[in-house]
Image (tube, rainbow, N blue to C red; front, side):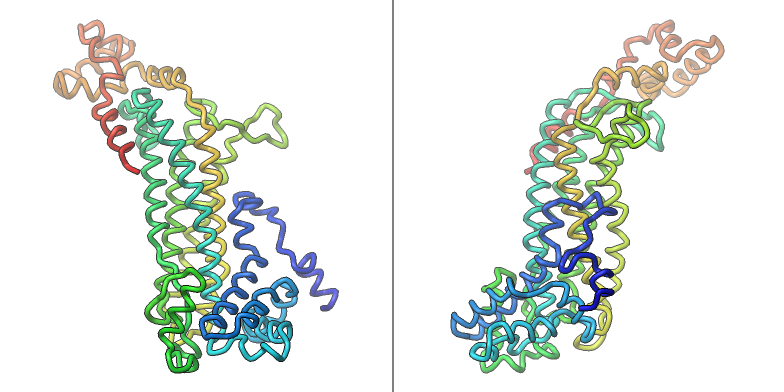
Length: 426
């Protein structure tokens, strides 16, 4: 390897350290999707292929154990010649296992079989991590919703005070989206890929369908039924679920970012981040990083959906375009879920500040109640009287003998019942 190649890639065999990716740096999802993890998955696919075809156990074991001798950076650079890492990987594995077992390496498969399968293995492991953090977030949000079932706060529409709601209902809504993300991600089928050169399984001997099924079982992946070289449903479904997960968690994040503004002050992160310039600040870092992930995810999703129209029996470019955005979506969803769990578990809620904000508009937040119970004309007259006398709506209503209608807690509708209903969902 030339010095130029070493300098271009940083330290040999290592990925960038994540200086520009704080939403994912240091997370379990980052480690589960790094180049070394992908290499382990590629080799696992090759070893499983040998086992599924009845290779001697020693041969499959030799293939599997060869991973420790492989250099990720050298494989990455060698992959440029053929457009994918499996071509140099197969050569390296044959050299590593020696003449005795070389004939069992990569037999009957094409490069896309191994890459697609490896990505599904990486996705399987990463999904478990994401789902675990979503469960943490869900449990914490359930506790918040129950604790604040009847904590009244301003409801806001188009950035303005609307009518009263409860923080419990808001937290229950956040949890509902988390569970939606969990259900969608958990439902995605992650299959093995084995089709051979053009999806016919022609090189897999007398029982190709049985071999393909055995291959999937060896890996703990689903049997796809058909090779999916250009039938990209598995990638599209996974991408959609990951992008939705980022967006669903982003809803919680942007709400927290609004509610923790200095002038709102209704919630705060358990431990805010600092500022390089202003020592007094405690920034909502978890929410910020989740929101950043949510804003990046759609761009990666668009690339993966753009690869669905894949030509012929194996495509040029479409399949290759999927690798980086799929990995990034796995990382973004993993990072967002980890930060969401931390955010929900540490979130501080300030009912006193919510009460202050309810009173900020002088009773206008319950004007809808006056329209419903007294009629729109009377509510309009009260508003006009308040304006004419330069008093608040609450003062005008009280003077007219309607003070009983001013309590925001009495105008939250079915909020409590909705929280109860939402918390019955597992």
